[in-house]
Figure 1 (cartoon, one colour):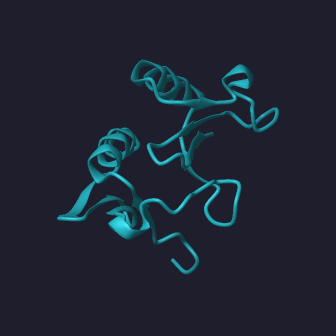
Figure 2 (figure 1 turned 135 degrees about the vertical axis):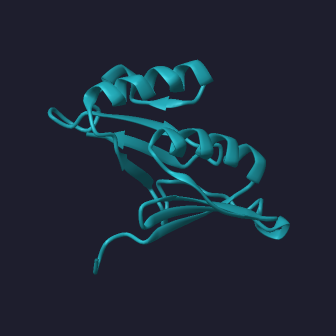
Length: 129
């Protein structure tokens, strides 16, 4: 379908660590491993996929901040408030940094039910209804 998101590609500082984080999360969201190679992995849900690629050594120390130019966050549909709450509990169990926990589940405003958290490279991730 014209205009629909095709894929997102993220360069990561430690592929092994990021793969563990994203594989856990994306599997819960219904994605499956699509392709793997020495320096990357992709996960696919229908015709949309997310790619992780190991950052080259010479670029690893380039600073990233989600409030600067570039990607601010990536958000996924959660399907239900119950699912968002379940993800929140699993994130806590895994010790993953959760944003706006004191405002959960309405950090985005009344009627916007979501949980926001951080991946290993400090990219903000959101699951929303």
